[in-house]
Length: 562
Ligand SMILES: [Mn+2]
Image 1: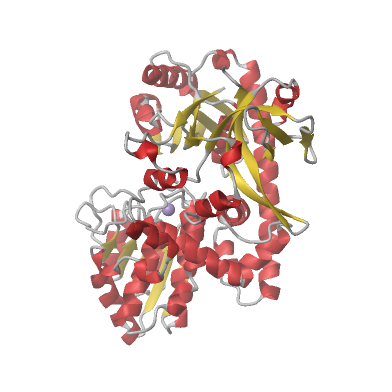
Image 2: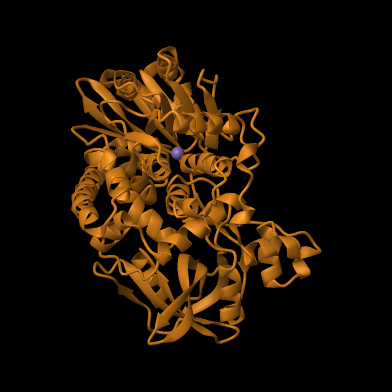
């Protein structure tokens, strides 16, 4: 069961507005000028890069590097944000004639951030300049190592900084002294702004740079940063680049995925590209994803894409297997009977997938979740939280049992001696339970408006699409409809019969609509009982036999209350 809650409460004047106007207001669109930003989108709406603290200073350094033909090391993290950043900055600087090389750290040997090996590589190979992307702001020691050897470091990061490192330039919208209005840039977004500043200094047109917006869009969707005005524009134009022509690396990945999608949207970025790009770093080396994304033709891209497809298959096999073992452990371990948190561990679980497994467990068992793997008496792994529980603070409250921990509200990493496991788990359980004061943990599903099926038409759908692409902080409208009954055509579908295909009739208007409820097969008996039900849903456009029909994508379903 989950709680259904209205996303935005309208004031009295607003309640008399039309449905479209109400949706606009809840998304910050209050006048014609606001709406025009959506109807007339242009790259001119991107913010001035010079508003980022230190950006002009960094651009000036890059100009000097170009004039002196200095060698530049482009360093980035092994996840989607890091590897797209590196692909973009490396590719664009190379095109401009810069002397560049790239470096992606090993997830297991070097870990997260600007690594000591990365710094040593720059020193030993006599680089003059290092650009760190999606990391660096917390790696002061390694940066100092480089700066002391005469290597300037430009940090492009979006993580909340502590004490700032002594780098040549630190570009980060979250710096307390940075006035840049878009605080939600991804790491790749920060890199894009640097390139935009450079392009202006070189008096070049920005058109060539816009071909790299596919990378910025990918990072924005995969890193779960808010779809602020500028971020949404990145995604909008990035998708346009992709739908015009996918670059060879992405096209190869898409072909091998055997996806049936006819166009690229946020869903495709999140469920097709992102897991594959990440799989390289989890199973072998993140550098392979950069190699793929920089491939110049489809033939060479296919070779690397096949390799990455195999990593992704292995990743999927591992995470399914570990999730299965974890569920068995939860069922047989009395700790989990009334716990406020799920904590599982086993020797030999692959460290690269425990975070994914934690997310999978939360889908079924709605509690903050920790998945740990044991090696030589040390437990290490990942924690994933749910809204309302601050994971970082919860771990801090148990820090006496931990060797190491770090992260933020929703996700964290940790390690501890195996003998501390039980004490740690009990303490964490108590700490998290306290945050709920005895309340059961319940999933909250947000909706925008209660509507009647009879109000739904193509016009409404088109008006909603005008506001897309959707993501965090710019959510796709969800509606709530009441008193619907099965017309007798609802059935389980899909290769494993896990989805529901529905046909529902509205009681007071008689309107009938089709819908799909992914993973909704558990509700089949309830729907077929012909009792009235309420649903939460989004609108989708079904194009079949050249006929366009609006259908419902059901997010949740329950028995009508009255
Ligand atoms: Mn990032």
